[in-house]
Image 1: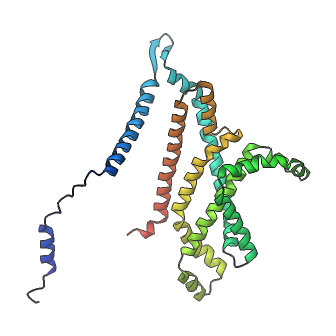
Image 2: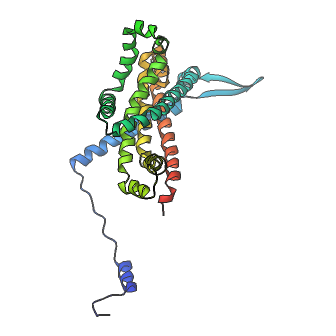
Image 3: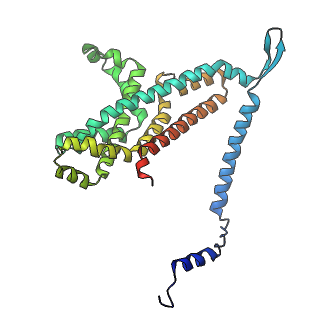
Length: 301
């Protein structure tokens, strides 16, 4: 070994004795000051709302002949007692709407993905137009087109015995949400499939496997792992977007919130609604992380 070369042990010793780098002091630029001030205001506002809810929603109880009896109930506690059950009902309706739309969207997105990736210009053009329209227009406009637009074609729909479906606001909302999320799922699935290396197809062909078996057993499972995170984001967007169905008389979480506010003019109705949406999104995020960790456990070393 030459004089200039060092052994592995010597290198580790030098590295271990090297002093840590001095912490760098970031200057307080105007942008940093404004950002910090804005974040502080948001935190103070959130803490103020939380303090208001915790200190105003209480029921004073005393022991009586029949056990615990309420002697004083604050205004905010009365609000929760009166409308709490309605909020729970709206919470369940929101979950049902998003769940049904996502499942139907998955069933629709698979054949549409095949059409989108097809070399047939007619099939590819139909799928492209469908995806282009539903991704390029607001979800609210799509709900209005189906709910209010169906009334324009009432007679033709009655002639084919379909009016029973379109006269129900729930059915229109499910249809609009299904068509919307399916368009996004088509692009998610298509991008995930195209992300799989072509060598997978070539290796399967070398083994004599048919294309349909290669897709279902090799390509699709890998594509679903790649698309897990985008699918989770799509569900979160659907949960938050579901609030618009309150406009067409569906009493989901936001619908019940609007009804409670219209009767009390109490802003805490929207505070509780925001908390409920946060609970849904956070619960979904954690469940999705567990699913992703389970399906990708073979990738962790």
